[in-house]
Length: 291
Length: 329
Image (tube, rainbow over the protein chains, first blue to last red):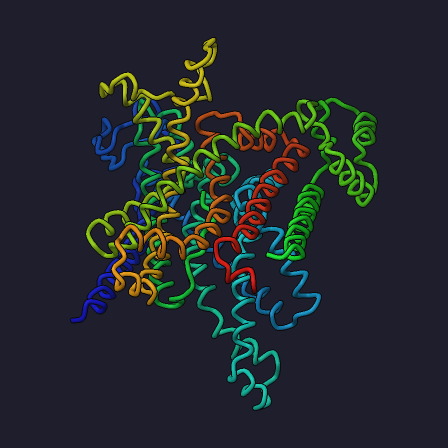
């Protein structure tokens, strides 16, 4: 085996491991809350159950893998329930943003003229404001909550992809196979969506993959600041916020959801890096506005 | 770069800034509800609300409000805070130096740590040290700033007391200086520095992790170039090859990175200011959001955007000096 082949195998193994970890986390978020003995959002006997350390048991012998929070709720189950929200927000937020960005960039490049100038001016304007600041400004205006977080993530996440796709479509439309499609009598719409765009998608796919981790981080950041997902619905961000003032007496309350967050984002980043190496070797990584 | 191009770049930046200002104005006016109702006590009569709307000019047509706001902005008047009735320029003036100090110190450290680290990794690609550093930088890069901040607070303040750290390692976790202490001269400087260690360290660590990821692939690309082979072949030592050939060709990319890294530092500093209770722009913005204090939110949003635009402009103008090929394009 050549050293490049061995390296590729090694890199593929990391990507596979990341994918497996993400699958495991997703499975956990779907199954654990269903199988849990008690409702992870309900508050029971607070005095008896609160702040049980990780691996501890309550008086009835119930086992708590990651302990309990200040209201006696099982942290592991809550963390998995929060994962549902955090993962869904991350995936939906970045995929929808990428889809809108792809459409905007492709249409701008194809149509040209005033439309292109307007779309790109809007994109450049929004890119000039740091994404978190834009998110915060929007959060100031609308009631915080799950749906507004997704809307705001989409509204502030499409511009980078739009710019990349536009540049790619402009490159691709000058290639001979586009001329060939036109010469064969394909309609303009068909040439754009079936011939030009599929060949311009690689950077958009990479950006989406890297964007999932980023969107999860931004959601957790907003929720940490109290401007995202609102308790009692758990998200990793608001769980960390909930453990903020317990960092001395019960550090596990803030640390556990953070570890879930780091592992998830790490896996998304590694997968995105792998995709980038595979799909768009020459394009460098986009430096996202991280939380 | 010829003067005409410099002027065009500056003109582009000014137009972009005007667009950002317009965007924030549009955003604030898209907000549901009437800001005047937020400003009056709950028992105020509709007449009071109307009077307040008139006093703040909120009853004028949107275009008139826009024109007023732009002309006030050009005169350097950002209006008055809804919540505290202090001029917004005073709010910015008090908060900006703190954020600027925090941001510049961590940006400097980001590059001082990140670039050499990335270069070493690029030079020894896929060795054990590179792998280890990659694991570290990718993990730090994946960690939320606010969570790292909380973890460090736990270790260096409360943990330090229980774990028996020496006194100089028990770092303060809140504020810019010790409240109530009347320190002068070097003692005051030392106090601020001790308070800065944790916030700056977190921002620098996160930034350096991102920069190192870039510098690594940049340097690895340059090392594969023919001219590097030539440099080795003609007998140049490692110091000369890395400083004169590798760093010189990687430098333009790093300048662009400097501009690109800025929004990340801004975002990070908002969380850091929130966790460590630093009264900077980020905390001022969060407080203004809580109070629905639109003028302050608008002003800070524009201030952040202005910083980013100026940084991008500076990178644009410096780039041709470092890479003569860029100027001719």
